[in-house]
Image 1 (cartoon, rainbow, N blue to C red):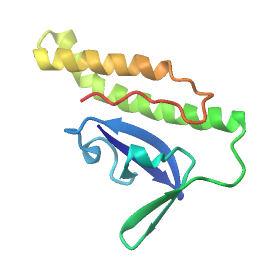
Image 2: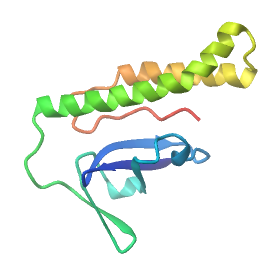
Image 3: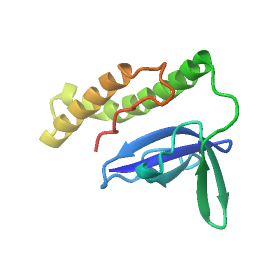
Image 4: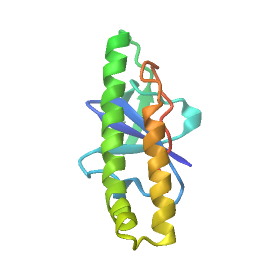
Length: 137
């Protein structure tokens, strides 16, 4: 598994884990900044990200903490974004299933995406660092 941090305005705003054979560049718009991080570094959403000398550095945010309302709002945005990406990935697979011409691989992948979509709905959005499900391979 590889873990990536999405950087926006100098902050880590999202963390996702991918299978080793998945390429983050193929999954998201190129304008989004994704950086591979080591889980052992303990990088969390809300950490400060800085880039210098071709290297990313991450530090825990020492400023004011997010209120429960801000945490919920930020997590809702992340959940909505991930749900939209899941829907976009599922649409052609579900169409093939409905038309009856889906391959076994497409059928299996559609089930994985549906399970992922359902799992997104069960994430605790009140958590400061929610555990997001892994994107299907």
